[in-house]
Image (tube, rainbow, N blue to C red; front, side, top):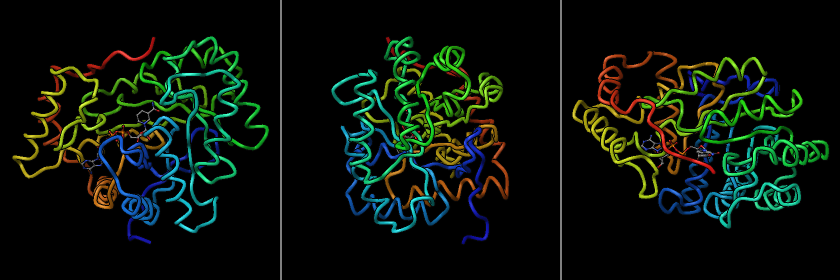
Length: 318
Ligand code: NAD
């Protein structure tokens, strides 16, 4: 055990404690470049050994590849199932969206087979802004409740980019139906709009997961992948911020992750990781934040560079 273990935080009313840095497994589906199976296994093992206990995937990532690889990686850990927390999703697939009760009910069996698990801790409706919210409320979530009763799923979640879909759904389902909400790209240096919704989510007793602290690659030295939906203006500002950090011997990814970790009402920050090096850097960033604090000066400089694009997002959904 490291001298300064990675902090764990309670997740809503689930009774689970999740590591403040969570493992986003979309890179294992080769979404950000090819990752070999042996690298994936080493990366997940390192994450687990350094205290990361939460792993997030989806059948959508790499057209089921992420789930298959994550399943192999978790099996290779050879530790009891209750030592790690796994979330996957339903309703979004390589073929398109389908939030019907029939599809999501079949989907969990397919996911469990790929993950080589008997249950997942969370099953989340993936990017609900692309479905009919009425269907999510009246058909999809009730189907997930049945899966919970059947023991295939411990908790239920919803994910999406626009924040208003969360409040819309939570206002219309029986209390306790939705255990967790996964928001992405809304709690980072360039966009922290999730903050406005946090008090509401807390009042509903919903666990809060925030993903993509590096804004899906915008806040990295390498820059985002080709498919990144940000505007050219936002991409250019993030590139300038990354260059500014590099010139000063600082790493924008570290600063970005530390920024996201500061809000303790957010239980876990999901970072996509594809190498042992990234795991080491991200865990170190969290421990440094807890022990030394953040680099206020450089952070203020980056916030200045990103000010013209602050809270700029992109369209998502129908
Ligand atoms: P991210 O912001 O975590 O960025 C990932 C990128 O940053 C990858 O290219 C990765 O290689 C790189 N990276 C990671 N650590 C780094 C470091 N220390 N230095 C430099 N580069 C580093 O974006 P993401 O992967 O899209 O989001 C994290 C996870 O959250 C996903 O893997 C997924 O599990 C989840 N997520 C879910 C949804 C959803 O449900 N709708 C949306 C987005 C993300």
